[in-house]
Image (cartoon, rainbow, N blue to C red; front, side):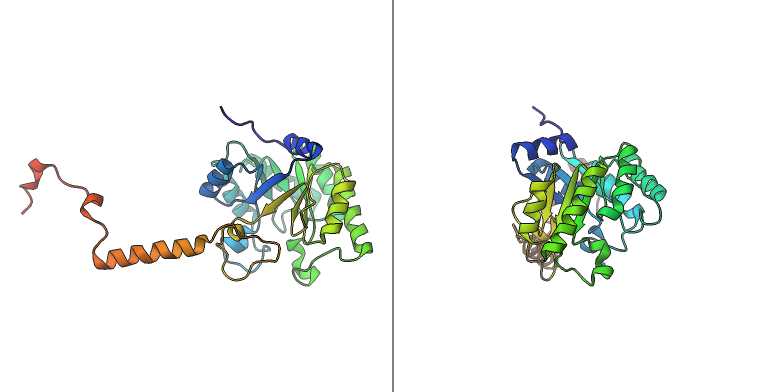
Length: 278
């Protein structure tokens, strides 16, 4: 029996029942298939693809065309999970009209079922416009990677009561504008718990402690595919980099020794044709 399709209303119902929401970033068809089979509630095509796949130092260089390409690939791999696509830096910063137009492209051309954008109160009018265009919007506050230059680096936000109040005001503004959920990134768990209690829509944490309504992690981080150190909030559930390197080393050794390909991995002429080969 096919499992029921996840929608934005499913996530709201999970919050009402106190059930945790699960998410992971996905960037291609294979990761989408595996995440969907595993049972994640929503797949996030994050602009983190700029770093994890393209090898750039930050998310700022991700383009709308790249996000459309990766979202299309993920769309083909999902049956159950909700598909949320990031709006990249520059795709909604010039005007509300540009923001609505680019959100429409992610839905019409790429198959996204919702879009995510960064920013609190200052983005509330845009969120309202996009929602009025029949597109669900997920907010994102706290440590917002697209603001890395303004923030002076990837720094934890909301570390004072005053700063926590400001984040709560951001969350309330996004809720009033019609956002269906909000990502809380890089903030003290007490602040995230406070926001989660105070707003009626689901909160999705990443580096925001265990009291959010759900959690999201980057695919490469949780599977041990990220070279170098990972943030404090990451729990590595596998070391696939080691497994992949080992498999590649065995393949290289077998090719060099002549052990691969073997006869069973080769095609053969029919017996009647072999005699023609001299």
